[in-house]
Every structure is written in C-alpha cells, then in structure tokens.
Amino acid sequence: MTGLAPERCITCSDEAVEAVVVELEGLEAVVLVAGGAHERVAVDLVPDAAPGELLLCHAGIALERLERALQTAQVAQSHKVVPAADGMEAAG
Amino acid sequence: MKYVDEYRSAELARGLSSEIASLVRPGETVRIMEVCGGHTHAIYRHGLEDLLPPEVELVHGPGCPVCVIPMGRVDDAIALAEEPGVTLATFGDMMRVPGGRGSLLEAKARGADVRMVYSPLDALALAATLPDRRVVFFAIGFETTAPATAVTLLRARAQATPNFAVFCNHVTIEPPLRAILETPGLQVDAFIGPGHVSTVIGTDAYRFIPEEYGRPVAVSAFEPVDLLQSIAMLLRQRAEGRCEVENQYTRVVRPEGNARALAAINETMELRDDFEWRGLGTIPRSAMQLRPAFAAWDAEQLYTVPGVRIEDPKACRCGEVLTGQIKPWECGVFGTACTPERPLGTCMVSSEGACAAFYAYGRQRRPAEEPVGA
Image 1 (tube, rainbow over the protein chains, first blue to last red):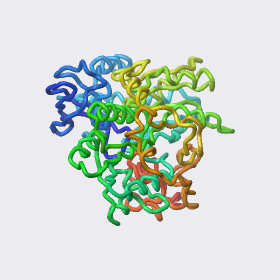
Image 2 (image 1 turned 90 degrees about the horizontal axis):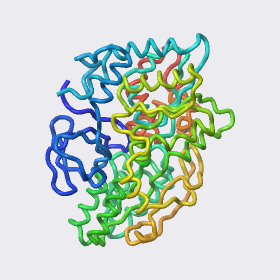
Image 3 (image 1 turned 90 degrees about the vertical axis):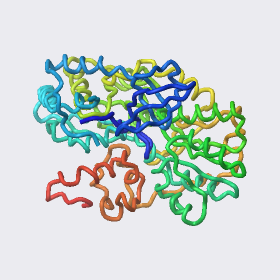
Image 4 (image 1 turned 180 degrees about the vertical axis):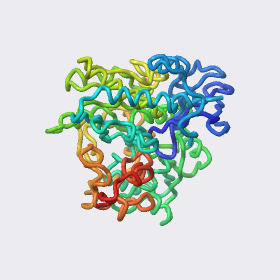
C-alpha cells in the first residue's frame, strides 16, 4: 500500500486528507495527496508549515499539522505489538 | 512510504477486539454513538461491527453535514441560483439533495448556473473569471468546514471582491449533541467524538458531556484501529469508574483546537438566533450567519430568500436515523424508493450518511430473515 490516507470526514465530494507539503509560496502550499497528485491549499491557519510536514487538509485549506510518528508508537506500545507491515486492506 | 498501514493492522485490530470483549459483561448492552458521519462510513466500510461483541451496539449520530440540512434551505439555495446574474457554487453532494422543488442539479438542468467546487476558495477564484455575475457559495458544514469559508471571506474582503457572496448554513456541533443528550429516555452510554471538528474546536469543547450528562467521550480518528481503540478507551473508562473526555486522535487534535481557525470563524460569523435541523427540529443558537461587517458578501442580505419550512416526505425517516432511534434498514423506503441513485432523504445522498454507508457496505451482512427495506 502506497499513498496518503484519505480521511473521510465531512463535506461531500471533499475529504479531509493528509498531505505532505512540497513547497510554499506565501499562504499557498503545493501538497502531495493520495495517488501522487499535487494540489494547492491555503495555509492561512498553519502559516508556519514547512516543506516535508504532514498537514490535514479540507475544502482547500490546511486545518492542522499531524504528528503521526508519536501516535503510532503509542498505539503499538499500548498493545505490545509492532505495527504489521501489511494493512487490513489497500487504501481506497 | 506507508501512512495508513499501522491504522489498518489486522494484528492491532484483533488485539483491540479481544480487549473490547473483555471489558463488557455477558448479556449487557452498551450503546455507543459515533457522532460523525465519517465514522459511520468507516464502521460500515471496514465491517467493524463484526469485530465487536454483541454487547456493544453502535448508534449513528447527527454528524453528516449534508444530512442535517433541511429541505427548506435547499429551496432557498435554488431560489438564489435562479436569481438573474447569479452563479451558485457548492460541494458536489449538496447538488443532489432534494428540496421541495427538486435538487440543485435539477435546477441546473432547467437552466440555472450551478457549479460544483471543492473549496469556497475555488468559488472566490470563479468570481474573478465571471466579473459580470455574482458567485454565491452555498456554504454548509460543521466547524471543520467553517474555517475554509471564513478564510475565503477574509480574502474576499482583503481583495475587495465585489461579485462574491456566501449563503451561510454552517452549523455547530454542541447544540445537536445537547439536543440528543436531552432526549427523554436517551439510550446512549458513551460517545465517539468527531475527529476533524475537534481539530478546530479541540477536545475541551466536549467536557460538558461527562460533566453535565455523565457520559464519557473519546475523540477518534477514522481508521479501523483508531475506532476500535476509541471504543476500548470508552469501555476502559467505564470499567475503571472514570467519566471524562479522552483524545484518541492525538496525532492532530489538541485540547484547545486551532486558535487561528476559531479566530477566523469568530471574525466573520456569529450565531443565529435559531436554525432548523433535519430530524432535530429548530435549535436555538446552533448555526452561524455572517457578521454585519461582512454584509457586502452575505447572500441573505443581498437577496431575499424564501425561508419556507418544508416538511420531509412522510415515508422518509431520516430524522430518526440521524438521532439514532432506528437503523437505516428499519426505514420502509430504504433500498427501494430511496437509493443513492435516487435519494428520497438526505441520509442516502452523502457517502457520510448512515443510509448511504449501510447501502454501500452493510447490506450483505443482514441475515436473510431481515430483508433490506422490510
């Protein structure tokens, strides 16, 4: 499974997606989203975002940055297992 | 590069499933409401109910932003779309929601200029290309989507864009939760809190639920392991005699939310006196309108909208589905007169709607003696 996670909340024809910042120009960012596509999002709400960071994007704007590694470790530790390499299914 | 595998790990899911089973007493019933339509979709898509013991029942909540829009507001949007010189822009699913006079898609077929956009910023950009028309953005959604509208309004003001307006239908999550919690005979023991709304408003916003209503909350992300972990957290609280707000979605949600997003909403919008919700009726101070400072971009100030209340079709039981009183398949028109291709009610329109999610993923799991639509 390769790619970024589409997180299904809210408004119809748009999902909140996790996306990697590729480059920034003022309050606009080019981000890498699921499937390898590049999109532009507004970063008015996370103006200190930096290239390489993961952002949660929804309806054309970045809502927040993600700290994924932290939680992955927490989940794995709480159940004393190492996250499996293969998922339950491929991402849709 | 792997991003979601750890949240779909079968090994982690099995571990959590066992833990959940160990936290309930045989024969009891624990009813957990997932507030967010995104969670409903994920639960059906991944078959999570099959990983739960029979003692745990998931109840679908009111958190699909498309589903809670009443038919009268759709008619208002159609009226705006039919105004001379207006181009109405909105999210894709809103174009399919039936009002009393059909849907926006049908209005488009009759000649109205209705466009689908992915972001209110796209609608603002569209206005720049249509200087002889006014682009009206039909804004819907909870606190997740309101920041995008707020940022767009701030940019419209900064750019002094004269031919852009917003028809504001943004709603807030706390009032419908209170309405559900105050339902006589409420049979919900715990809540899975919405993930993305909480990115904006923070987990502290739900403290009223344990403090005033004695129900625990776990704010959750959307992958299978996330949701199972949230259910385990709620049951653990119960087993340990705790009742509080816990945050499972720590990778993005903070206790205080996103201050910039809240400030943008607060600068551009204020609470309405009241707003009609599908299935929940009129709830005071539960939705947003533009502040007077943004009157130049407020479609409700620039045009007269009919504002007529439309009764839902009698056969449609979206209201009871939205408040967790019935399951989708218990509605008489589910899967027969009401399908995703031709929805009668809003819950069948959006993929976040409980009916659409069950139609897409859950039907085959129903026992033969309980036929769909029965």
